[in-house]
Each structure stands twice: as C-alpha cells, then as structure tokens.
Length: 146
Image (cartoon, rainbow, N blue to C red; front, side, top):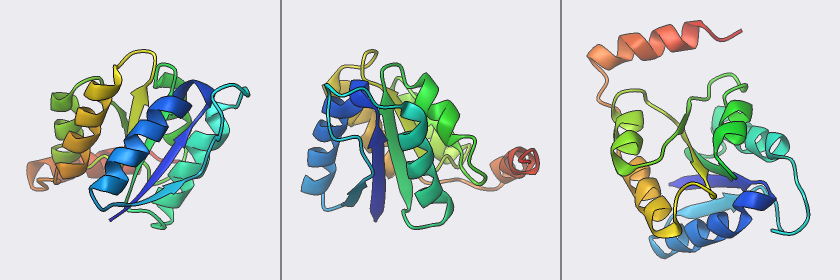
C-alpha cells in the first residue's frame, strides 16, 4: 500500500516519526514535503499536493500534519474526491475509515503526542470501509462536491 505524507513546518518532526514507523511496517511512503521544521511552509500547498495524489489514485491513502491539523485538513478537503478526517484519537480514526470511507487522515503535531499520533495512524490505516448503510452517506458527501 502506498501512503502519501505531507506537512508544514509545524508538522515536520511528527511526519518524520510517522514516516519511519510506516516504512518499518512495509508501507511504500511518498513524502511531498515540507523538508524542514525551521523554514516556514504553507500547510495549504502540502495538504493540497498530498490530496491530489490521493484523488488521482497515485497513493492509496494520505496522512497530513500541521500544528493543529485544522488548516491542512481544510486544504486537503478542497480537492475533489478527498475525504480527510481530522482525528485526535484511535476511535475517531477507525470510524473515519469504517463509516466515512476517509481516504486521508489529518493530525495536529501541537495537539497529539507522537506515540498517540502513531497509534491513530495505525488505526486509520487498519480500518476498512464497511459500506452498506454508510455507503449512502458517503455518496451524499460526494454529491456535495463542486
């Protein structure tokens, strides 16, 4: 499975930890940037780039990180075909996949400690969409895209 990662400067260190964790698990990881925790970088650009890869199916799923996760999730969700869920715990990440067929996870590096962020990412990546009654809601969400 190919996972795309993206972050701004605030999310860089957490992104690096998640990348190492995913690579140890055998995931193919593509990092669209940024490459520094000290050089200011816009969450908009990196969130959108990661989301475009997911939307084009150049990556199976995506994980994006900024300070709170809010801005980068908003940027990702502007891309047609992306359902990016901002999650602060494993339960939310699991349900984002099982009920909402989320194809991207957003995390806040200033909100979630690294060990919890890794567990949240694992819950997201291990989740499988249940379909059935949830498929109708996902269809409704997709119909809202302009």
